[in-house]
Length: 326
Image 1 (cartoon, rainbow, N blue to C red):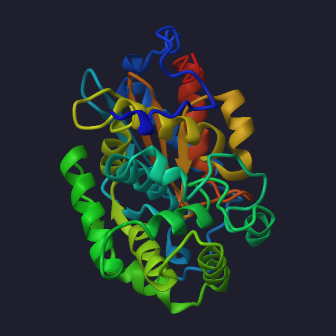
Image 2 (spheres, rainbow, N blue to C red):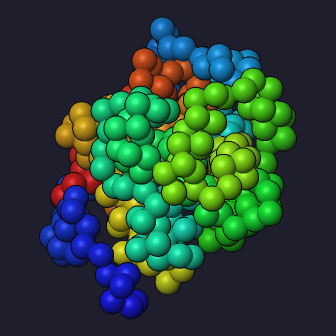
């Protein structure tokens, strides 16, 4: 790695060999322990809301719950509606970041987007205005749209396809573009995202706002099952020869502080696992050096995170003594 790509990361010291020597016991999970958790999680769905600004998402059954726990050592364990596919929506954001870090390097990526947390909603235009047009981090819409503009392609479809193939090849997942979901996303104008893209362009962080928005819509409609999502999570869980450890660590650190929007700080203290949510009800959590947890349940809390998904991750973290912070 060249000197220009050696950036110290302010959030934590991932090179500390003692960082992950906590009581991580993902291997202790059995099918008998996971099955009752699904029953409890379905109770958590009560009172959750489905998003209405994307019509197709509003048609989901709020009682659907699925979880897949993938382990570096040993077979995976799954329960619930595991064959049901769903769009990743914002859960794709850390993997867009990972892809661009691998392709462009650290300096190029973070010249376009920051790495600071935000206490504003994920689609806040006021936050972007206050920051003079530079996105606060890659996990909110402004940051993801800015990075979508760096996915090389003549249009949204080609940029998305490049990302899809790269992720499937490296994670052994089977992501596909859900055309019906994309049509639904396009059916209602998202004026907030358009205003964000225009401000990014005016501030010099986006060259082609229309292509960037089209690419962003496409990548958010990449879909799969909880198994596919867990396989993606494994890219961030273990050192391999196909992903730079430094890039993996950077993505995990940003997920700790930014992955769950306004709920990120509290979750970091209580659970401490790098985690990303999406408005579809998808959640992926990384258990460093152990594996990944993928959940899907479309009923959302007031912050926009899956109620049952967060419950499952919290319960697993407590009962298995998982602690991503070490």
